[in-house]
Image (cartoon, rainbow, N blue to C red; front, side, top):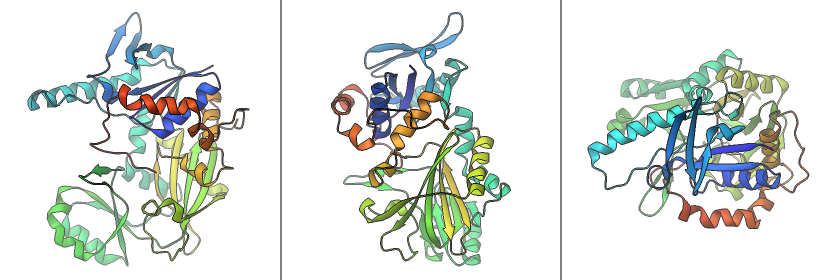
Length: 367
């Protein structure tokens, strides 16, 4: 039996589904939501005789030295009450940030980290990703990272077409709807918004017109990949995530061994054990590296392809600490089945009454 610590945000379907499936195998699971601190929960570090942290989650006390696996999925910062003075708020937020950074040292040295915090920091650097991808033999798009209008203008004029993307998956909640940042084509007309471009650095890349897009999920040594394209594909869609799910055409696929090996080497160099790779097959048949999301979404694949046991494979990975040992479970752990269980409904029902909701401020990307 494993005891699993999941660091996440409120109403995270992936984390809640994994909790139900892992508990169904007899494992113990604690989901910890950083935004619950300091208004709902507490956190203490003790040195008796070794460092450990004790914390409350849904009224129960836990200690970090109890856990065998840490799934560091989505860290939400401490959410301070609006009543605090703005000057004090800045100080308190900084102090909690440092405190949360210390948490990684409070777990036992032998725990399985998904992903190690140091690896997360490296993997979240998209510039580093591109450098490594090129070094490992991937084809990568011509790229400029800049807020300099002259540089951006010269880049736009140097290639046939350019797309813009952000460093981190980002969404905002407006008065009536959510807005999500997607990969979008830009032209010289966008240079008229010079002030906006100067205020925030952007990633500008030559647009690669593609045959297909691939999302490859790696759990240790295991690789589960799918091809994604619009049902009415004319090669004109910049970002498949901007299309409604019912308009996708998705199918399982096998990556060439050389591509799998490059991905594994990149994960090793970044120090991660889990990652979702976005790759394009271009017009010439080359595999073009776009990015790796070290904590990307993966269960949505199973909704489109029920025979692809993403949730079961993830639970195997967590439980065995050996991603080559998959398919061990005798339980019905299909994502769709777990969503229909009473256990899952109970978690959903108590989610908002039990935890602080940080999501109105900023959202994680759905995929």
